[in-house]
Length: 148
Image 1 (cartoon, rainbow, N blue to C red):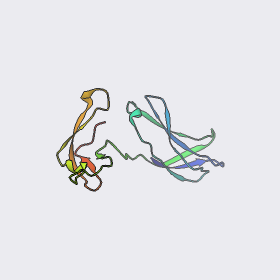
Image 2: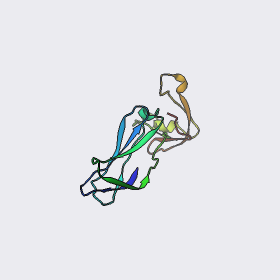
Image 3: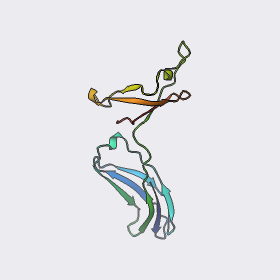
Image 4: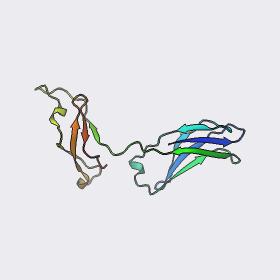
């Protein structure tokens, strides 16, 4: 999230941007902007949606200032999606096998990985196919993102 703010007032006011999700009614602060008094200030912040937010049916973005008589101007508002479902797996640090190989050497393109369930139901498990394996880092890149 990013935006420019100007509070029309002679006092130094700090605008606050928050998000309220309709599932829990809990409000999460995205950013507290630096103080502004009749000057434009640029603010940027990140908000990560996690599993606790996945059941939200809607979200409301709100601005707050701690002054009932001030006017707040907002310009150049931008929301940018910065993530998504996981498409890479990182193997834990591994030791060399007796034959000189490592665990990531056992994985290759088109190999299938069973991703266990994120719930207690076995039918929520998934099978993912490998696109590539980085031999230096052991990072496995999947052909499709993991659903959960």
